[in-house]
Length: 204
Length: 354
Image 1 (cartoon, rainbow over the protein chains, first blue to last red):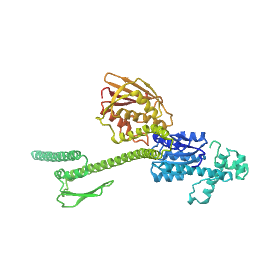
Image 2 (image 1 turned 90 degrees about the horizontal axis):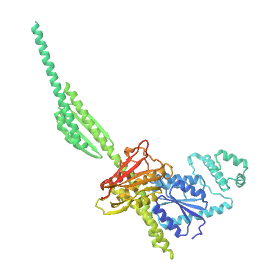
Image 3 (image 1 turned 90 degrees about the vertical axis):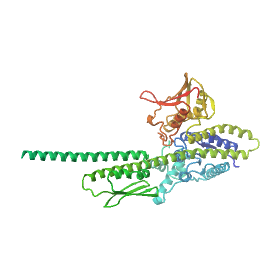
Image 4 (image 1 turned 135 degrees about the vertical axis):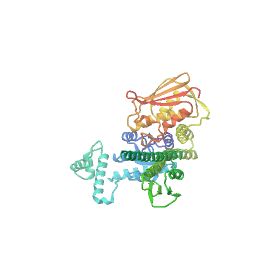
């Protein structure tokens, strides 16, 4: 088993299942924290950078019987460019939920009931990807994910990729404009220009 | 000369009286037949095929010569033919959802007032049939919508239970040496929580309790405290009582009420309210009054006990209805009040001897 280099956040509204999942993960020496809804989860992610994996149920209150709240949580995590991998573990309508999860950048999608092995394998893969991305980052390579609407041609994807990259580098450098400009090989004025163009503020 | 004019007046008067009498008789007959059709429709429980099959004698009494109809009832065709099919017919068609009715009415070759009486009767008949078909379509829509809500609700909970069982089985199958105690500890913690979930499913499906279940002694303060903890609600309880309830009636009723407060606070981002609960023992019964410190209000008080109605888009709308039914089955009651000055307040009355 790989060395665990980060904590896991369980976002699940069912207290029984949450307790069971936590027990299973702790048995495999993972450090686990819990949240039962979106706001708590986001608060914990912002407060604890040691969390690297999120296991997310899509059926969260107040919409426990559809995917809207889980999806909103995933979108919020992605929009804040948090350095975490999200594994969706859900009992919601599989086809629709899987499609939305992938579209919004989930690392993996597991349908309930999933075996312990399946969940553990997904976690190990996520940690492996995090580790490799970290290594690439040291070589100056940043991985970004952008959804492209093919019909919109190249211009749309260029702008989206540009925005995503600038946001990510600013996030990684703690909003240090000088360092961000250095990493991107552009002038500081360019960074200010992009911040204005994409409406990027420090609190984003 | 004057005698002849008198005679003409008398004849005219007699003629007018005869016409009025004839019209009065026909109007009375038409009215009686119209009412007869309405009563027959009620006796048929607004069932279109049954009404169609039984309506001909009344239509015939009204003077119609013949009728044939063809009913496509959700893909199955049924037909009827009555009387004589002479002269030209009047064709009518009604289509509602997957129900289609076509009819041919054969009238006598009337040129007089009888034609208008018959037309009125036909329109009444058609109106009743259209209403019956709309009632059926609306009942089907409501049933499907309720089934779909229930399925969605059960699917979520049952998959969570399946996931719980899967994880438990996996862990028990491969207990790492030296970690037996750890597994046992978290199973002890998780099992009651999932049992609570399973109980909720059972009660949702049965929508009531079995009155023949064994009586169980329940200390109200203990149950209320644990349910509030489960729904992460702060609580202030005044008083206490020991009651005897069949099965889990009182637990489920209280759980359904408290869960609404939790769900509303999450939905409206108002923060968890402080629940204020007062338990009082009276001569024959115990009363439990539940209200919240944040002044929670119901958007439509009169609909709170309506099954499958919910102010929460994600709610099943059966919890409070079920709570009321279960309490009433054991001789108790559930009331809800709210006015301009006071917030939503639930009051449970439960007999001391259930």
